[in-house]
Length: 566
Image (cartoon, rainbow, N blue to C red):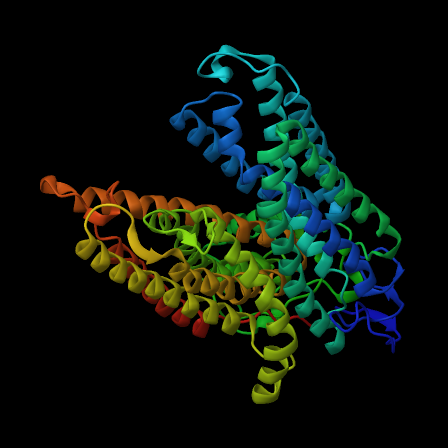
């Protein structure tokens, strides 16, 4: 990108060396509104915003099924269905928010708009909690005002939360100048601290907010997350004068379809031997929507036909003639899809910490000293592990890897993602070994609770947190850095979509295993009484699946060609 940013490095550290700061910089960049801002000063507002937003989000998610069953009197099936539908909406909405941000409003205005919907939805749920308790087994079917207002607010919250999630992350990364090596390092650090903020919010919500809901009731318990959404909006808006705001670059979906249509129309056109003859706008004539001009790559050559000039009349028709940059944008997205697909399998493995790991914990000795530890509480070790590993990675591992590899970022995005996949294999191996030991003790002990402490599960939860720091953050960096400038919000949304598809894949695997292992009257691998089953074999199966996924990832990563701009 032909743009310059003036910048003066500050000598004063920010947040006592946890986050390295820079002072004022003057931004003059094509497609970006001009601001004088400090990149880290602006990002502090964004990190606080994300922490408060996640606190509110998990304040609803952690206890939603409990609210549906105890307050709205739904049965298990109805409550589970409503929870799944709500989560599905949360992961579909990012695609809508991303398209709006990239095409029309930009990331800043889109975030503010969806935050407003988010706040209204949270307020509606909080108000519904003060309505008189409805009667009947299923309030939604009874059409009660309490249930109507609650579900209206719940889905407004889902749309708001989903719509702003891909925008906030990309907007934070937009604050850094990719043309400066020092700024690129700070952007890499930002991704780490962004996930740190997420898990701080998750941890506080899973402990303090859930405790408040259980002890002070739902009126107070729902207004607390609503208050934090209001604080999140306030934090985001307060930083407005510090932000670098990129303007929308036109619809990425339309640009992609223009390439496909133009290439199909010219299916019989011969490609020139000289790639420089392909159509590209001169830099000084390039519109703001073109962003970075991308260099041609000799892959997916059929798509290059969209940039072949066959007549003068085509120059005014984007559905008949596209630029090389447009063609390369589509090639980049297609090239990223195999890497994205390996993330789906990874998130299917990650889904076990909130399902089969809990079932495993319920069969173990939950008394530690004078305390009884609920199995669900061990999920907090996942958040604690992330909170522990982020500073270690950012302040210890990255400098060490930088000295070993000679690269400014230490590990590349794909190396980091691959390390997370290796850790996912270790997660399932640890869980399988624990389950093998538990089954041996169960066989020797007989019926009842197995005399094996639930603390044996701590290593697998701790490894999950380490895996998140490598795989999830690495994948997020990859999608942002490799995505064309016009599609960064959309690619962030695809990362969130992988989480949802991973959950569905996990359910599919569980269903298939249950069906295959219960034929002939057998109890199966995952029966109601795990002492009669073989959950260890299921964990070994997932370890094997993770290993296969790692092998596929390595092959895809070796063949991947990085985006190249000029």
